[in-house]
Length: 373
Image 1: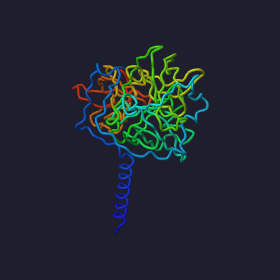
Image 2: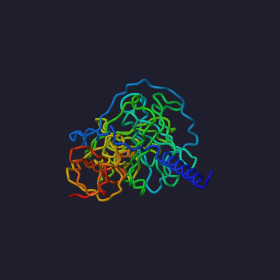
Image 3: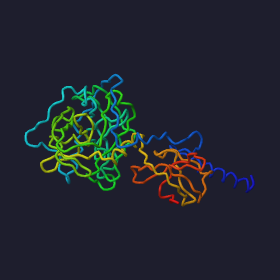
Image 4: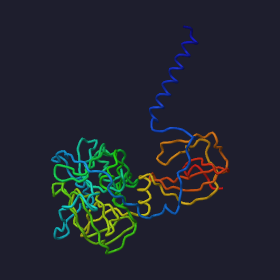
């Protein structure tokens, strides 16, 4: 074998290696322009209106819950903010009808972390495969960051679950929580590996709330074994831009519980205690936008401006989950395109949906990569 042939073999081997490396690195991303168009956009449907509740449609499943002896409530790790508390007399009540009404949608969480320990929390079903909870349940920097696995039990009672079980598939938390552990942004979503919500049903979410309106929350407090559901009722006493405060009794282990109104609409996620009130993260219009995004229902805003591309090398996305990239063979630096819609992404960036002069959809661009003309 002569030198040129040896060199060619080496070159082919290197190319093959890097192709395989790239394929492995981007195993969940593919490039295409075929058969992809922007999801149908109906702006009348994409506002801050409540999400839609669904009723159970599948039979329940029964199974054992692992021993909780060495599992502690996640809330106990957060000493810089006051823990949930009993406000005077303990008005919590054992939920006996936990397989019906809003209580059927309340779930118990077991979170495994990279430090090798497991913790407990609560959550509420808001989609077929989606749990709403507190961000500190699934992301805590001091013990390794993101939970390595979350097990969700529906219908938990002592050593068994009577409705169903699922595991986490994806975890999402507000950027402000991940960046700075802000108690004003302690909200997260767990995407599941099964459609557990078809067994539990779901509650809807709203941004509408009033001072002194009647509220309820329900979860799994650690002082009541952590495997029995307790609820509490009270009134909304105070609101800030990002939190709501109420006079409902809660305890460690209930973080992540939904806080809902008399229409069974979630208005906040329970998380903490403070002075003479307990409080949670408010469902703001922005938070509802992010929740809908994580539920794969991103909310567009009208933009309708002509823009020009600023860079020769940019990333063009085929979806806002960033799993599909669009090829750029028909995109030219300096050309003018129509940006019809703007999407505010939970990662803190804004993305524009661009169309060409023939009204063909091009893809999603980071707003920083274009300029209005």
